[in-house]
Length: 224
Image 1 (cartoon, rainbow, N blue to C red):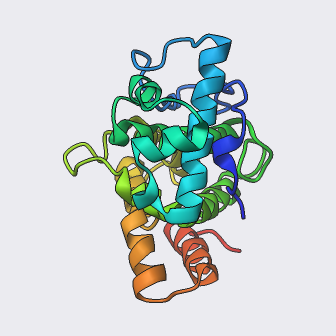
Image 2 (image 1 turned 180 degrees about the vertical axis):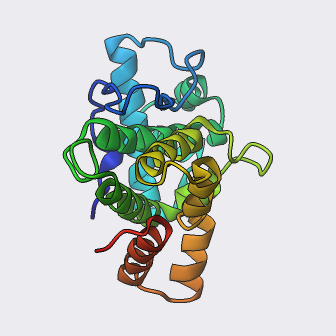
């Protein structure tokens, strides 16, 4: 799948945005205060813990991720996990941030059509497909680590996605209310909605993908 194995992948240097001058700058996920430059050994330990947690999720779902289980899987003491992530919510958030940084790297500096170099409509189509499959592959984690409603839309990773979609929409429909329209498009990619459609309604992913492409074309007036 598109984002399988993202937890164990080493993060490349974060690419610079290749957007038009004056475009809002995408935000990096995570907090600078929480993520100082790590020593090499500390960075390796953190990556090992994230990999162990991702394997637990793959085997047992998000419910199987406890601080004790991660410590045992990584072969470290429980205190090490608590010192690195604070609590279970911090660990789940770190896992999502790791994935979100990879996604941002792909749409900021990866190959087209998701990355720069393709027409904005093609990039918007590819963006939604990438987010759909990323969310489907880590749905339990997405739901477990989702911020409370009052902070849900202000989380840096969510803000980054909104900024990117807004930039693309301004290139396609400069006279539209692109800030609000971006929120409308992103609502289609909400993990809770994907959970409902795929697990409760039994819709296949290819139907959701087709629905996203149709939505983009209708919103932007593009012709396939």
